[in-house]
Structure formats: structure tokens, C-alpha cells
Image 1 (tube, rainbow, N blue to C red):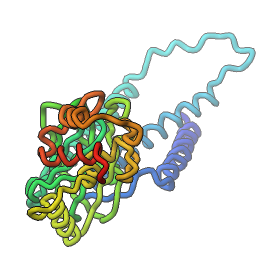
Image 2: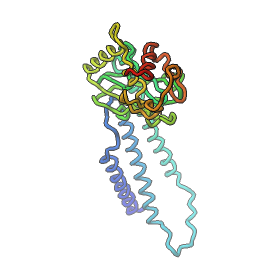
Image 3: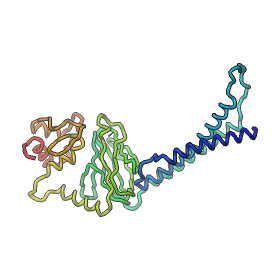
Length: 319
Ligand code: CUA
């Protein structure tokens, strides 16, 4: 090959690599990094992007050079020369991609293994996904339940996921880790938050009409604030002896994501607007216990006392 051709090919490749590298570098592509696991995942991402830029620069360079240099003149009707192939080039374009893909595979396997091994003693949180809400249970904190995911900073949390009805998938972009919630089996992931704050927690598996609304928040607190939150939740869950069950609290914790009810100040759009619905106590209790029409059953989720309080709250005049 002529020296001039090699210089031209390399120059085009460098310009293409320069432009694509600037686009990769100067645009803020990824969400804020808020977990330890994201560090390894971002490394895999950027190594893969680097490999893609390398391959793209070579392909673009050869395409642009060949397109300009060997383009057909308007009056040229002749056939091209009968070239059979080039063994050296074929070996190169088989071997080099094989090596690059192997690098990505090995690096991914290392990061996956790393992200699957807990650092220290992880906090355990059970995640229940159902159309179209999330529920988080803290078995080591007296079984408190929440509809937002509260996590202490700088401690691994092991999420134990399952689903009640169909496939769902847990994702907080800032944490990176993503895992399916599947009916009948239990899946797990580890998250080690590194920044306090509120992040969106979304279902990322199409699970029905309310899929787009199946979102809540992940809230990362300092260990001290997390302990305060746990204490508050335990007090709220166990009303003082002789005290009343907080029906409005039960409603906002379990029903707010799907139902609008002005006296509870909720505005969910997934299920029927309860301001416009008037059903008898028996019908309401049956619906809460057994679910149906897209609503999950709450039998076993709530105690009988809680269900009775909720029925009272929804059908009675008190509230
Ligand atoms: Cu649950 Cu999409």
C-alpha cells in the first residue's frame, strides 16, 4: 500500500475517533453515581464504549477513504478487478473482534461477581412487586413495611425480590443494579449506597396498563437518620395499648399509589377514584381481602383489625 494511502487512512481514523470521543466525554450520558456497584458497571460501560470507538474509527476510515478514492466515474461502465480475498485481512478481522469481545466478557464477569458479594453484614429488605406498586419489608427491623425504599448509606443492602402476579423488574438508575421480580421464585441483588438523597425507583419490565406508573422512591439516609426512621415506623406500626388503629395511615401506605381519595390526600390514577365510588362495607371488605379487577389481594398483608379499620374508613362517615 502506498504511504499516502496509509497516512490518509490513519488521519481519517483519528478525526473520527476524536469526534466520537468528544461526544462520549463531553455529554453527560449516565445518571449520577450513587452506589458502589455502579463503579464497576460504569467501568464496563466505558471500556465497551472505548472499544466501540476504536472499531468505528477503523470502519469509518476505510469506508470514507474507499468511497472517495474508488468511486465510479460517471462514464465508467467497466467491471471491477476480480479480487478473491485477502487471508491476512480476514484473520485480522476475526481475531481482533474475538479478543475485544473476550475482554468485555471477562471484565463483565469480574464486575458481576464483585457486585454479588456482600461487603460486611448486609441489611436485608424483602421486595414485593405487584401490579402496580412496590412494597418493602424489613424483617430485621421488626417487619416494618414501607412503599418507598429506605436505605442506610455505606452499608450493603440485600434486596430479596419476588412478585405476586406477573414479571416486574427493580431498577434505580443511580444504583445501576437491576433485577427481575418473578412470581414463584426469589431473586436477589446487593446495593451499597454511597450518597444520601432521593432517587427514582422504577419498574423496568412491561407488566400491564399501570407499568409506567409503577414507580416510587429510594431514599438513602445516614445511619442515624435511618435508625430514627426505623423507630418511627415501629411506633406507627404498633399503636399504643387501647389506642386507635391509624386507618388513614394504612390507606396512604398501601393504597395511595393507585387510588385517589381526597380525605387521605392521595392522587393515584391506576385504580378507581374512590371519591367517585360508593360501595357497601361488605363489598369493600371483599375487594380489599381478595382483590380482583387488577387490584392485588390484601388478605395476609394486613391484619383483620387493619382491614376492618380500612373498611370503616372507606365506608363510614368518620375519617
Ligand atoms: Cu411492574 Cu412494570
